[in-house]
Image (tube, rainbow, N blue to C red):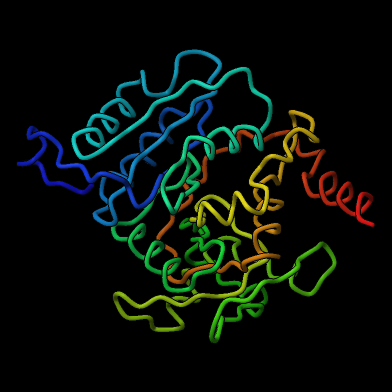
Length: 290
């Protein structure tokens, strides 16, 4: 990926196997998807394939001019798969469907309202390979909050010193209270305070990550993936929290500073949050435990 314009008309020099599969679920967001794909088109390394799965009510997002143009740019550089996945059975089922399409050693779940800065994918991939944990991620930053410093929320920051270790996180635990770290532009402020140099990155402890998470595919599958979708109603939220907690218990997980992910701050498409996935799945697991 990341070929320049003088190479676009040449037959793509594609590797036999992508190092990363980028998995993008989308629904009724053609403008946001175009920005997300534009961020991917600027990534250089490692070699990656893109899978977009669309659950829009009408025409798929890639039929709109802006995302269609970005698909063409990506196709000029490497493999792109466009899939329609209907009927809608919920967020967890959609993610499991995308996971089932992946064959690469690493898979990035990238939401359709996140822009990645150039070099972000390479930084994530290098961090995952070096740390050998279950996942690493970049929490998307809301840049409209750059002037809104929240020291009371960034106080929970704790860098990993040495190997990333497995953790068990549940609501009410001290580890759960790390979640405000990812609010607003907190990670941007932390990165500035740490005076990180170009190319540097720091792993840190998380409660969970949303929007941009790179997994070792084998670790995610071993932890169950999103197969718990069958126990959830179609309208639910927090499916990524459950999957990450299950991976973290076996392999550990980490956030990465600086975060090269920017949240587009578009209105959420998940408007019904009455059912949190962990309230159902983890309670069920506890009840079934001997």
